[in-house]
Length: 277
Image (cartoon, rainbow, N blue to C red; front, side):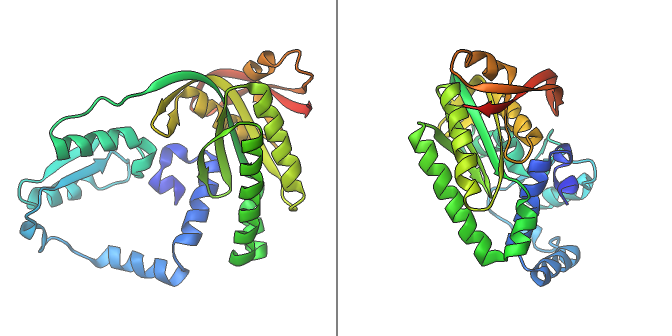
């Protein structure tokens, strides 16, 4: 289903893993089947003309979507506004800025100028290796307890190394640091701590300019960090050459992992695995 709702993320194993967990936790098989049957048979056409509230109908330019049917549905709602967004993915939070801009303009009549701040940061991404299989082996309750222990360990170490938690999705963490050496040592400490729980993580780090808007952190550096984490092996802390160069003289040793392409990111990137801190 990941290919259907987000074709541009079809090759992103981190996203696919997150989506599989979302499907498992969102509904039982029977409930999911019932929802699909209802969606296939429900016809809203008779009630659309009765809608009196101002209505915004958003459509995403997903190749397999029947856009004509949505345009016709919007035309039946009195004074509805129909907007097609260029995103090839059907999940609004994958292109949140474009979606929120349309909603803001619909509600207020204007698009506000978001206050943002750009700064240099080291981004860290971690996730549990083989989480889907492990969850299946343990069952929902025991897996939830293990995740709670994992999260507690990660947050304890983020606090110790002065990292800032930005986002948590399932078993993955996204955090920022104002120093790359501390970020590396935090990643290694997390790896060692959760090993005591019987699990392994992978971690990826990159240093670059990020954009901060409220609690959100975005920018190319964030995408690079996420892609690097996806390439890391079990219990491996993988960094870009940018990070490796910035910590020269810190005593941190690396093993060369060669040059790689990162999906959706231009150029080739030289990567290094942390050997010891």
